Length: 114
Length: 112
Image 1 (cartoon, each protein chain N blue to C red):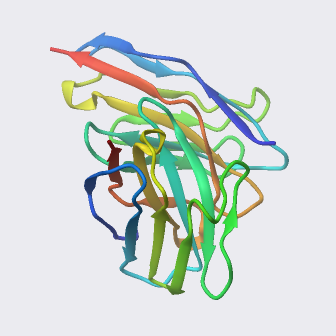
Image 2: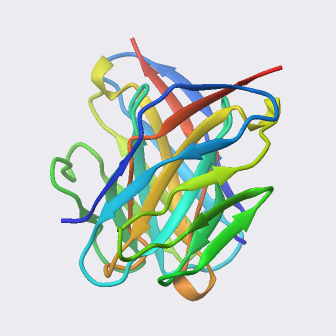
């Protein structure tokens, strides 16, 4: 299994500011995924991040709001830009497992926007 | 597109009771199916998986069988413990790599 470290684990931010979340994996992976879990809700995929190319965003998510970097095969960042209280959620990084048959998740970043 | 439907919670049980969480899916092709568990204040952990029809995934006393004919992947445990209190998510991975589609989650509360 892959070990995924996310930073920060939680943060309280002022509206209008931006927060960058880091995701570090202990092995090289081709695909990394960013999910959002709104309070009491299930997980929704924000985007897929591949090294060397622009991230692919799901319907309802745009690059200006959620810019993503993927500089190498073990690291990615997600920025939540110009935050509003509606962005208060848990943001989770995920990577594919061995043989592409499963996915592993980081501990998540619990974001509260005030 | 792909979708996953699971029973709504919360499900409240006494210790040693039998647990079933229903999960059905809609997908093209032959998806892989998963159950993830989220303990309070933690991220998601893979509980079990099945990658083809009639496969049975099992872990920590939990079981689920991939039923293609009924497009279901119900989670069961014969005797729950207080430590099983968590939110359980059914998910599938379709043709587009490991992009997961999740069900709504089912909160389970086990009382002593």
